[in-house]
Image (cartoon, rainbow, N blue to C red; front, top):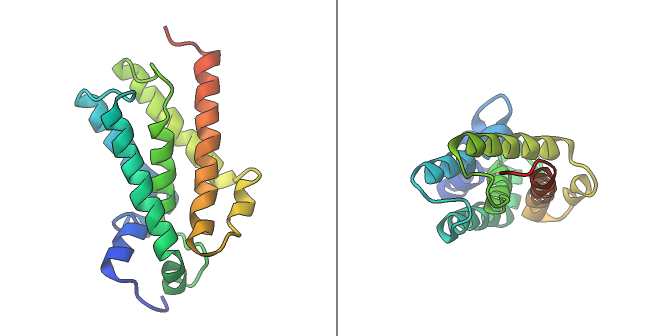
Amino acid sequence: MNRPLAPLASNLVTTFALGMRRPASGTWGSLPPVALAALMLLAGWPAESLTFGLVMAAIVGLFGGACVRFGDEAGAAFGKSDPSQVVADETAGMALVLAFLPAGTTATPTLAIFTLLFAFVAFRVFDIFKPYPAYQLQNMPAGWGILLDDIAAAIYTILVMYLAAIVLPIT
């Protein structure tokens, strides 16, 4: 590390130190929104509810904003432009996916588990392989480059989720 991050910045960009976990820090960073979504579903808040959507939107805003605001500082602290310790982008991207789950895909506990697992795996695949233009978005300045490739992965995942919901209709 070159310059240490302030505690607030460090906690946010590493998603409360999940970015320090190995292996696969991005996978660790993608888990909190999924766990929170599962808890919300268990508590009776359907994915289609305003509360569910607002909670996921707040996560996108908080952790996405942290990437943009503290991205340069994190890059300097960890010595890379997109350090693996910074997983707030995965947290924000996964929450974006969950904010746009297709209607009915969490209607039963079994379907909800399948949907959350499918969304998680699809997001991780798109985040790792970064199909066009996701890979190129990493070249954006400051924290935008850290965040936008994960937003692209989230958009790809949302599209796949809706396609799957059409092809495999839920009855």
